[in-house]
Length: 270
Ligand SMILES: *[C@@H]1O[C@H](CO)[C@@H](O)[C@H](O)[C@H]1NC(C)=O
Image (cartoon, rainbow, N blue to C red; front, top):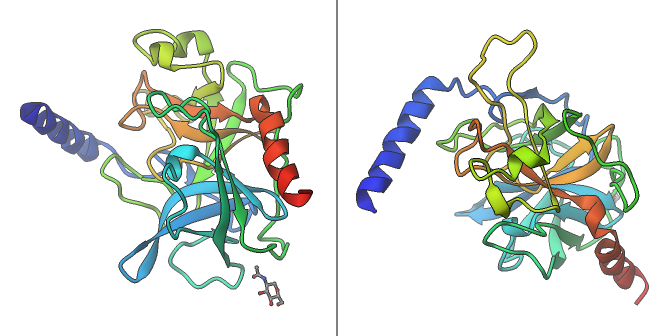
């Protein structure tokens, strides 16, 4: 076990040495507030708050995210909307306590099946150009097919050693064939029908044929968008990000319409 850990550390150092650390693992900085639904879920670290996971605003008082971001409860975490730079004072920022946390009851921590969670904020947000809800795909809507271009955003790690960007990054990825992701050399049976897997090999023109762009640690909970509609939630992937046979995994939102309506409806109309 110890030698295995040592190997992993050496592997990470080698990876870090060769990776340029330019993105969400690839990708680019988003135009400020061009994705006004983005939420930063933050946890106290000492006397400051630290970004931990993404999320996205889906209704007046509701943010969607991943269960694995808050598996044991809110524990004092806060949700910040209207963020572009995590560190700077931006007058667009609105900070909330978590009034209710609804983790999907069938979340499976062994394979991250049903990795969908809803947060009820402690109060309504003030809608602005920097803060507004995004539409999410409902049952019967068209999910992206294999090879479709989808996009995602986050403040997640730039590399596998965990260095984090200050400003929101975005990335276009392509939906991978689910048959491939179910193969044993990819995710095998851990890949369920509630998941989309996606990655992008490289930019066109292809100057880095072996470099994978991917969502990574800290991007979790953020949205996967198809034509501007949230279709997925950044969930899981390889233990390391940007690996060839471990594309990013996203929860299929349209499979949870009934649960979402139940949670959000119940609260507004008890
Ligand atoms: C919304 O704006 C009002 C008036 O400026 C302010 O009192 C309130 O705190 C704001 N709400 C949030 C969530 O920031």
